[in-house]
Length: 287
Ligand code: NAP
Image 1 (cartoon, rainbow, N blue to C red):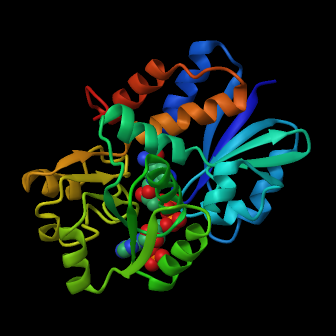
Image 2: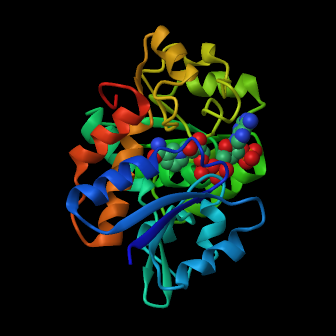
């Protein structure tokens, strides 16, 4: 009987995780099956207990359920505890253990793939959901000086900043997305801007922009963690203005490699995963 791993999110049909995770299981000869399951709003509490039926090795959790999943699992890894968000679940006997591999995925994408050192730098992130929490912790581990959390719903950004400030060193502050005067002057002083919102994601809004790209003039590095498309309109605009840019595909594959290791106890075949992800996206390289 093959072991199952499921991706739970809404929407999930544009995700390429099933393609590169299945390629990885097949490459190492493990009888695992990875499937995506669209979970309608409100259904996660009834969906998660199904992981305990003996057939599952674990799950991935994606937009918009990473924070909700945190409250539904039985135990947490340190990074999950620190972020309050879960993107990977490991079935351990009767227990569902929540992990957050987005933290390592983002850190490795910046440090190893982009080869950038952000220690002592000023960062801004757009979005305050599950992914933003992971990126915030990763930026803290990298050693940034400060993180401005810019969000459409200011209360959510304030909650993220308050909660994480108790656990991490960089100065965190919340900024409302709609306060364009403050946003413009803030971004002008930033060394890196990271989009952690789904604005611009395939199947979400047809290539919209999360912020006025004119605000990115002079920002040296712009990261968009959206993996599909590989290069969002935000990144196109930022590159046109002279910024160095990094898309979300390396983070996606690297977080997936850590999840693979957690489910199987085996080192992930990273080259296989990277190649399958690039093939799925129709690109020669993940950057
Ligand atoms: P989430 O928990 O649902 O959070 C979404 C955030 O984006 C919230 O702060 C939300 O603001 C904001 N947002 C949503 N729609 C918006 C809009 N139309 N205008 C302005 N802000 C908007 O989602 P998530 O799990 O953090 O995922 C966010 C994105 O990151 C997704 O595109 C996901 O695919 C991507 N991601 C990529 C990777 C990777 O490995 N590359 C990993 C994780 C996530 P409000 O608070 O106002 O609702």
